[in-house]
Image 1 (spheres, one colour):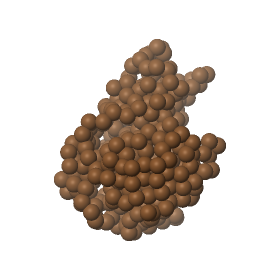
Image 2 (tube, rainbow, N blue to C red):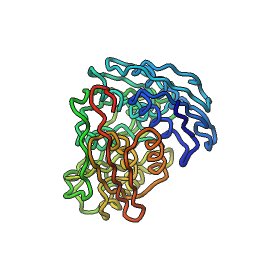
Image 3 (spheres, rainbow, N blue to C red):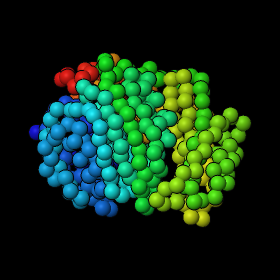
Image 4 (cartoon, rainbow, N blue to C red):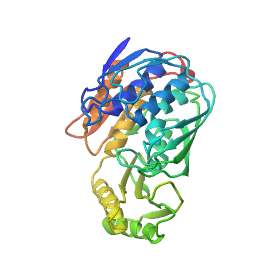
Length: 348
């Protein structure tokens, strides 16, 4: 049984998520120790537990230690299967992170999947559903992954209650590598402004105006959503798509924070990125790493910032796979020699 130290490096939930995904993909038993040991509340929180339970469901795993606060988990995977699934985080914990945990497994299942996850869709410290739909999924789509999401109801902190629906088609061939050393021309720049339905509609416009002010003359397309949810909340997410690259930037509203400030925060992040030459944002750099490692061939992309998340994720992947991962600290260039995991759940 492979043993993973959950306190290594960044020591957060990404160690758990990557370990679960690779354990299921490879059919390899794993014990994860010191889960989130450095956090104020160490061990499994509701969102992490939901990820464990979801992964166990899609690969018929035997699990020991799956409870709130647990700092050690044993996970013995079985056969990966697709189909219809429903999962509930039970809090405003991120539905998007639960989806990212199980998505690699569903891509190699033998049948298509339809997944509904209830919880938070637009919450801090996790990718909002707009980022997943318009940045992350198109990026892995360029590698051959066929998945899409729809937000049936947004979920904000503290009550959550949002619902995300994902549809995943199994891979017919191994993932293709990305050649994103240079991002090329900007293809689209879109702001997604959302405010819960009981809040004034003018918030949507003001968030967009704040983003446009920060971005200057760069053309910014805008989409708005004003649905009702269990808790009030607002967010603005900007998605940038390039010939060979993608990036996203978000800011959330809070009581006493002007809507223009929300938009300006996301806009300033996007403007800073556009002034540079990186092909992916710092979060996508981390999220793509597992897919690059299981793809067939050499993936190259350039991140705006080397983070401890990225270094830690590379270490975790290296415990499971012989994929060569090189991270150039000076240039932000990430090079991955993928192992070519077969489609259909076959062994390497």
